[in-house]
Amino acid sequence: MASLLVNSERMSIPIDLSSLTTLPIMSEPQFYEFCRTNPDLRIERNAHGEVTVMSPAFADTGNRNGRIFAQVFNWAEENDNGETFDSSSGFTLPNGATRSPDTSWIQSDRWNGLSPEEQASFAPIVPDFVIELRSSSDTLKNLQDKMQEYINQGVRLGLLIDRKNCTVHIYRPNLEPQVLMSPEFVSCEPELSGFKLKMAKIW
Picture (cartoon, rainbow, N blue to C red):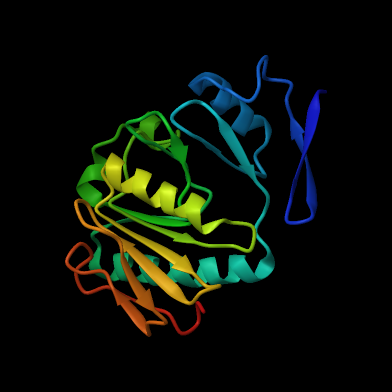
């Protein structure tokens, strides 16, 4: 079995390359098979077919991601207005990229408009709302570029949480990003009616 070691955050991760004939550019079918043969990894593909492999998050980052997901999930359940997805969920954007936001939310009518086959794949849909949490291995520039891509592809609201600098970058279409310094909460209205992301246990 062909394999590749990808080092990130001081971890070495064996990757099964037996389904591939070329690297690092992958077609959509190659990427799908690559993800099937490496189910324990978070893998993204950009609009040019270039693949990024991300190691499992450190426990502290995973804990904070869980707290973020729980808040969005509980709000969505209470309002019965959409579906919430964690960082293992991949979506195919209109530009061909496959992205996995740390937390995302999609309105019910849009999600239910997909076929069961589409829902069971890297769903061809742009989330309405996404959150990215910066980890110790992430550069701020790369995450800012990713957030702008989300907005360009149709995301209505995006939050980039930078724990290192205690800032939250808020992205909306046709607006410059708004940066909040050490906020106690972040209002997600009007896109997510009544939802405020509490930051106390995320910092």
